Image: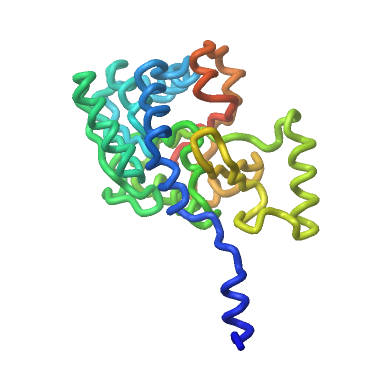
Length: 261
């Protein structure tokens, strides 16, 4: 007879982990998709507006987290921001970015880094950027809060943390999240999910994890880490993106946060 506790362990479904996320980004089709977006799209109109406003001095020292194959970093370099370090947790993505760096002849430093445990000294950067929903692809609230805390730590006083996230308070998703809330209240949610707001679904390129936060919840986590939230605004309110940008991305909310001086 199998002891009850062991039997429970066997039946207990595993939660979505960093390994699942890395597995998705190690797939050739995903790498190709990100490479195409880097080469064809570049910086969004909305990103150009935000970066220009927040970082008017192009001599600032910037760190990009979750850089993928370098779409944002290459765009920043072309715009004149040359004191730039780009990093990603996925070794495959970093390798792809380095290949593109040589192809495009743009000298951007790419490193493999864990956003929840960065290998940089405190107060090392004037700005930290976490591109298109990158932070929300970190499973588990404690881990996302670590990423926020690490971004705060490596920022110099007065520095800015800019990132984007989806928004589950949008009216178009109200019915969907009401249904999800009912599932969680009844204990009928996907057993692999860690918390309400998590999504782990099949796509054409594999199973993708994403946490979709509530605005007030995210604001409280940022403030708890010490950040002053100066602005949060939907991408569509900043600019009307072209069809190519919309092909590779969708609506999201920009967050502009400052580390107090």
